Length: 111
Image (cartoon, rainbow, N blue to C red; front, side, top):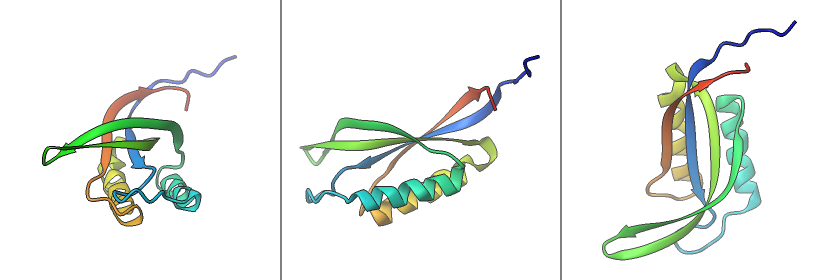
């Protein structure tokens, strides 16, 4: 007999971390491994979504970045606190002025 798994509403956090700082200095594999461990401790799981490229503009200057994408599924009642912790971690460990963390409500089944 198959157990019935009802979908639950959770929050998906999508985080982009650049491969290099604003001066072009690449971050080490250890820096990403430390982030992954931190995210795992916060959420209980983290998916590495691969590399994504993007553009951003500041004061008429256009910048191109290659980022690592991470996805975490967290309980709705903890999403904001976890997102804030991720932002602070990335700002400090990766020397970023701004951090992209997207919070999206999702329905998840199979737990």
